[in-house]
Length: 209
Image (tube, rainbow, N blue to C red; front, side, top):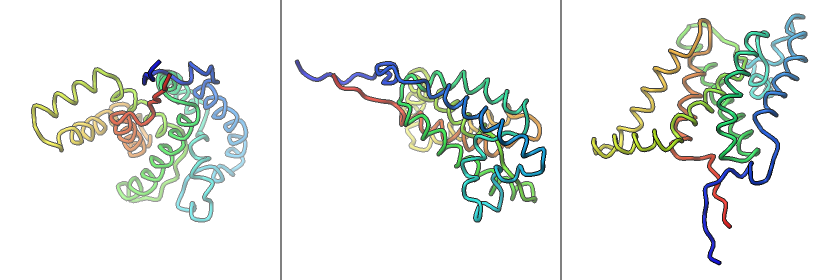
């Protein structure tokens, strides 16, 4: 029988553990370790700051650490909703890799660009950049938005149309969905990273039978 390429969720096929649940558990465990240290004045060990050149581990720890219970809870709620959608079309390894890489990109963008725009040095903490990347992936990876973007591209006959639409959408959504004193630059960067990844279906798994 000939091989047939099917787009199916490999995680479901292999009955793997949920990477969304795993990520949520890691966030909670890190918070239980980090928050008491933060109250003791040692929170800087987890936050991404200009000291990253001598504290490179903060590139990752800053993604999983949070400023307080409310910060953690809000991120967990959104993570569950978007993570469970994304994990259905990818593998645990790709999910976790995407979460960390997008989180690092968003954190560095907030640290560098955010500091320039605000004229002050910043420290970054929280998983929202990576979670916004998952949200961006859900927005553009589905067939409906894919069809709309393709139609817009065909009607305008310009290679720049889709990038402009994605960039503009990321700007608007990151502003609308960001609360006061939140890392808007990180949210925008994560969202745009996720949108571009979703447009190219970077996490999609093709399984041959």
